[in-house]
Length: 353
Image (cartoon, rainbow, N blue to C red; front, top):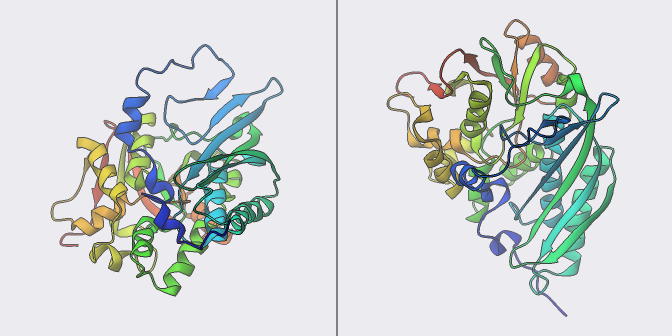
């Protein structure tokens, strides 16, 4: 069968982590699921919407298990595979673990995508797994209307190195390790207007493994970690606030952005997921008066293979940022703080910006 080449993004209604269910929808679907309390060795389950499940073995070793997959966020099949694999492995790093192997998850409309395209998707994913030092040890594939690809990933860590999203402490500083704007860039790709340099910047950040998470987990000054993906910065920060039963303050003027993100957002390149994210937060987020809509969209922008949000001792924060920068994450910076108070997000910004 001779199948013509097609744009991968044209085959999907959404792309990357932007196709995740909105936080409010997911919360509603999980509302009547049984609690995990009978399983004493399950250290992290579904209670706080964390990045992966964690099971403690008798010798103090923890097994970390996660799965993540999505529809194409770019048209190049190798890049799609690389981004999806990087994003899936990130969940293990966000828990403080080291990945040990992965299983591939593949769904392909077999009558629409050429075999060589599928092979390139798989090669892209395998190349990232090789960079992480793990094999793709198996997987599963199905015939579906829209293309999907991702991984189930298994990792390990010591019990004391598990980093949940619910262990932030009042007074902590918040650090973000990668720039925001991937959703805005993906919207520009859909319209065919993202520049070549913009595409290169997007691939560089979305294929950068969050390996630093495993190193940060060894530092007792690091209290909580999560990765910022489809729910946007505000959505994942809100999970930290609710899980830790504290308030989070975000300084919008300090946020690292991809070089063209602000300009594209002002031109209206926004994903539907960004709008759904904002609607899901309800009254748990307070924005400064007069904040332009385009800035709000960057706060809710769904990140595909985004950075880590790190809650740490404020006295050690500058040094931790320098460590993260030196490890290959130049955009990392302090973007906010954690305070005592009701679980909610408050955004700060200079007047008139």
